[in-house]
Structure formats: C-alpha cells, structure tokens
Image (cartoon, rainbow, N blue to C red):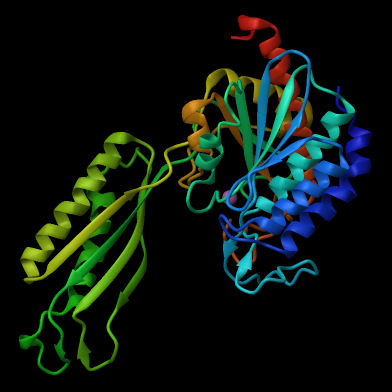
Length: 393
Ligand code: NI
C-alpha cells in the first residue's frame, strides 16, 4: 500500500518543514504564520482545505470513495520559554519555542498527506491542524466548528524521549491523566519584620500549606492510583524586613481515577479551611477543571496497533504501559469520537533523555518518517476496517 522508498525520498522535505515550523514558533491561538505554512504545503500537494482563521484550525481533506471519513490530528502551538538547544534552526522568536514537538507532529501529518495522495485511501481522510493544545483546549474549537461531524474515528500522537526512534507505544484504555489546576490566595496582615506579633504572616502560612498538601498524595491516596499535586508557582512579599500580607500559590493536580480526583479536590478545600482557622488568616482556593483523560477506544487501538506493526514491526510495538501524568486535549475528541493516541519514540541518543517542555528539547528527526508512515497507514487500516463492516470487532 504505502511506498517506503517514497517516504525516504520525501524525508528531507519533511525535515525542512519541521525546521521551518521550529524557527517560527507561535503560542496558543496565535498560530497565524504556522497556519500559512501548513496551507502552503497543502496547496503544493493540491489538497483542498478549510482555514478557520486566527485562533482556529486548518482542515485538509483527501477525498476517497467509500463515504467513511477518518481524521488525523496535529497540534500547531508552541510554548513560552527560551530555547537553549543551540541548533542552527533554533527559534527566532524570543521567549517562544517548540518545546513540545508540535513542529514534528505537523510535519508528520503533512508527510502522511503526501503519502496518501500517492496511494489514495479507500475513504476520506481529514487532516486536522488544531490550535492551542497547550493552553485553552484548541480541540474544542475544532469540535465546535462542526468539521468533524460524521467522522468515524480520529488518530493522534506525540513524540517522546521515553522510547527510541522506531518504537511506537499504543494500546486501549487510559493514556494520559486528568489535569486540573488551582490557585490559592492567602490573606494575613502585613507588618514590620521585627514585630511579628502585630502581623499575620502569609509566607509562614504558605509554607505550612505547601507541606500539608504533599501529604494528600503521600498519606491519603492509594499508592497504586497514580496521582500528583504540584505547586509550581509561589508569590509573596516585597522586602526582607516586611511581613507579607498576601501569598499566592498556583498548582496542578493530575489523576487517573475519578475517586482520587474527588478526594484531592476535597482534601485541598479541607486543608485550606483548616489552615485559615489555625493561623487566623483567610484562604481562598479556586480549582479549575482541566483536560480530561485520554482514553483510547478498543477497536481503534487495535487498528492503530496493526498500523504500528506494519510500520515499525513487532519489535517496535510498545504496549500501553502506565498512563502518563501529562495531559492532552486530544481527550476532548475522544469524548465524542472513537480514536487512538500513540507515542512516537524520538530520542536522539540512547543515553539522552530530555523531557517535553524543556528548553533543551529536540528530537531525532527520523521520527518524522516513522510518524508520516504511521499516520498514512492508520488511515488506511481504519478505512479498510470500517469498510469490512463490524467484522473487525
Ligand atoms: Ni505536546
């Protein structure tokens, strides 16, 4: 079906595409130049598309005969942060960087588009380039626009250093955690650093609260139910000899079980209330719902697994292991459409592990070929499977 020699021939072009995205990163909902590059490539491939404008997506469409439609999804946004890779194609935009590999995902899906043009699939394939995966849930913008109405299944993936190039992790079930965020505002009474008895020190209360919250995970949640509470931001005080009146904390909660999530939400409220009482302060806690868990459906996970084995062989197939505590707005698609989310091994060297979102993040670009072949193959496999009716179940 798919031509490996064509993939090899096109690979240098996919590298160029990825590097062009990488040089000019744009943050969530600002992906205008990025969309232009996607559109230029779709036009070059003579693929019709719809552009939803700034803050929206680009949807390419490869028409096929059967009346069944499947979607392939790539995310377009970059992250705030200053790149430290020193690569010749490093970010040219100060304070912005493709530190999560979305540049690679776009090149992969565009690569798959070229392969599918050369080997037209038995059905229609939508190429979904969505905005704002990192922040704001761009997937919901795509869903609300209605372009996915009637789509039978959706497939997505993410690069990772957890695996080598040539390895793809796939399986049915929970792939990523539920993510929620919270902010805490502690209000005490400001005062002179030398006269604590006249004040209520928000910094000291923040210290108690930070420590107390850690016990929710270590003492209250079943250790077999992966959960995290991280406080990533603390702000308080203005001078060394002034007692801070207020302190602000921001954090994230990751859970893989609804009961653990409920317990952590309740536990945060309980501790905030108790510490306010204990220290004569006011503590406001706000918890915001984040991305739900990514849950791969069984039939689509099997379809994806067949594609994985065809592209990287049995030896490259990594069965789904523990869920990742990361989060992904691909979850929103999977709440409405069956589908499968995979991870593409992308380590540059065996001894090198660079986490996603690191300012030093980079990939082994060979993963672009693996990803392009996988996306094209999974579209084929899905359309063949649905074409056979329900036999594939
Ligand atoms: Ni990402």
